[in-house]
Length: 314
Image (tube, rainbow, N blue to C red; front, side, top):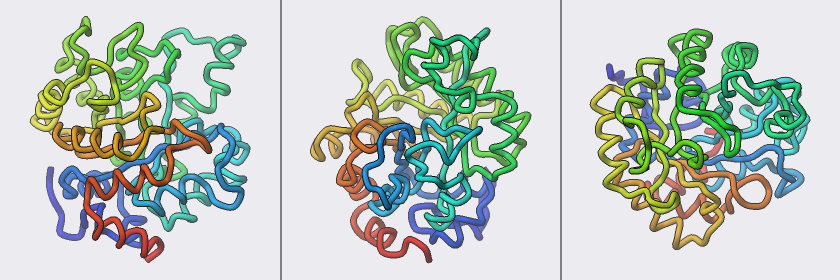
């Protein structure tokens, strides 16, 4: 990766600077943070925690460096309870232009959006990876995209690879794209699972060749059977092939106590991942604020965490 002096690491950059970063510069800012970036996730379809504060604002206020929107509807964004009437750009403005990304499920081959069962699964076609939604993401200046498959969706890794390639072609070279397999390990095992019937390194290489900047992995300690050593080996392979890596703490363990969050965060850090994500399980469309805070101070210490909390719009 070619480095530029004008790009400050994400964990210490002010919002006024981050808001002007391109996708390539955001990737560099993550890389320069040396494994200390925290991403919060909020599910926009759940009832809100506070009537006058979005979960996105709350997560940044407690130490998150990036926030991922799950359940975002490209057709009617303001209708999602978690958006509280705002559209994407308005929400991003509320947090001073800090990185706010969107999760897009990769529909399996032949998915019929008019089928009642499928409409219940995805709610609306506005929430999955389609050419129309990808074009909107580019036009709106979405900070980053994460491509995967929601539990029960039937999405395979091949679907994720296909849509990663499509996303790169539509969104262009600058869009920061995450892709991988970190959940829904029933019909097809997640990356790093020793019972997987595929070669994980080959899948990683295909994702990178398709255009993924950051590969997504499950977090040891939150996904059964996944160890630090398994994920560490795959992340080293990812780094050697020019991409970054994210470890995702989810499986509803994100709604556990702060001691559990601290222990798993330390395990995640040992894997060598660049971004540490925490899922949206919990009330109000996300984990508890104290779990975001615990993860933040475990990753980057109190000084960086407090500085960000105290200067949200500088």
